[in-house]
Amino acid sequence: MSLQNTINEHIKKAMIAKEKDKLAALRAVKSAFIVEMAKDGSDSVDDDIAEKIITKLVKQRKESASIFSEQGRKDLAKDEISQLEYLQVYLPEQMTEEEVRKVVKEVVLQSGASSLADMGKCMGLLMDKLKGKADGKLISQLLREELS
Image (cartoon, rainbow, N blue to C red; front, side):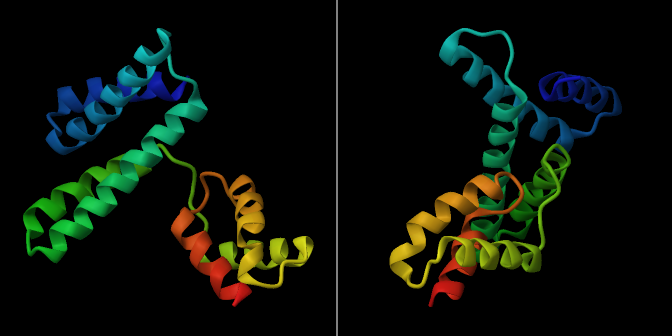
C-alpha cells in the first residue's frame, strides 16, 4: 500500500477513534499531498515525494515547537510535538549522531577533503548517502567539525 493510501486509511481510523491531534497532523499531510498533486494534475503522490513532504512537515513542527517553547507557550509547543510524533511514524528510522559522524568521516576520507573549502563537495555526497536518514543541519554541523 502506498504512503498516500496509508495516510488516508489512518485518517479514517483517527476520525472514528476521535483522536483530534492525530487527525490534525494527518489532515495537514493530506492537504500537502493535494497541493503536490495539483502541480501536475496527477491523482496520486509517489512515495519518495510523499516522504519528502512529511519530512518537511516534521521539520516545520520541530521549528514551531522550538519557537513556542522560547516564547513560553508550552501549550502550543506541546500540540506541535504531539503532531510531530504522529508524523514521524511515516518516515524511515533516523540515524543516531554517532552513526552520522561515522559516515561523515568515511566520506571525508574517500573524497580527500581537508578544509572547509571542500565542504560543498562533501555535503553533496553526504546528502545523497544519508537522504531521509539524517537531518541536514546535523550533517552540516558534523562535517564542519570534521573539516575544521
